[in-house]
Image (cartoon, rainbow, N blue to C red; front, side):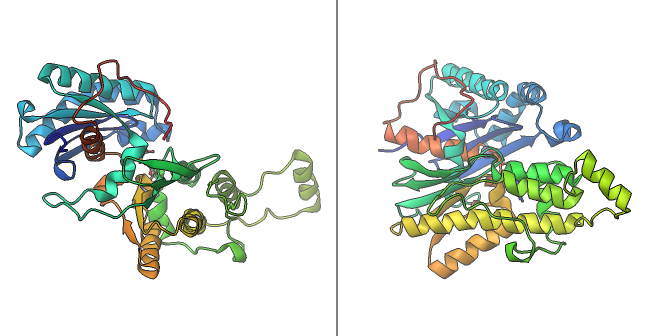
Length: 362
Ligand code: KG4
Ligand code: ZN
């Protein structure tokens, strides 16, 4: 079995318009990402209608740029892949419509790919011009993004079972909310990561923020309590009118709050420790997994990357961290996963009823 040689990948699930040309599933010829951060910054979050309009304007120029950068023409493309789930419905529809139209016109297969699943393959994509060594399976998968925080047991890259997930906020979402409260530049995750490097991080035992353990043996995550702890540490615990009046009457000074850099450092320490805690548990429960595939925007986090590299060295694990350009949303990962999917289906793509789906079962 061999998959198609050249795949054009398209990704528009949230606020990045992206296209990539990937050869034989792992060799990236081009990877173009047009981020929309400037359009959403004033709202401190992605506005769906603005995102889908920007995708509609940018999709064809971005596809053109990806073909040019790869030095190929449309006629060279053997299949078109698109992230068709999960995501913002209006945003997904732009990518899906473009992918179907291109594939139909070119007479090549089109395939819809799960975006969260594609994050798992990002650590297996090499730098331009190089293909990394294949990894051993079974493996554990860890996706840490703005929308998802999940653990998987993977018998292969295509056969993955979810073994843990967040029961409330995704870790990236908690980063973005805390960053907004600290009035950091949008997007919040990278800004908070940067500020955290300058602050004093308090551990859980020294007045730091609590880690959600949920239940003994649980591989699920929770970040909403951590987010609230960080917000209260910065702004003070909200008081009832009665308490405030009593304090005023007693002449109490307002309680001290934590400086922003220390909130950022303490939050980052706890967020990364929470992720590492559940990953360690998963490794104990699945001792036959000696490979860890990591993906999603938060895999760009400096402290998480440090901790994962230490874990790899201490436990002699093969930890596949994506290159920075494949951590956040991109179309190279979409084309890479599509290659393996098409290979497993003897090249058969989806029919033209394939559509955008806002949720994921992955
Ligand atoms: O994978 P991604 O691009 O989109 C989703 O599928 O959600 O992830 C975006 C998330 C955002 O929440 C962003 O703040 C976070 O990844 N992020 C980071 C860092 N870089 C991106 N979070 C923490 N530290 C970073 N360095
Ligand atoms: Zn993503």
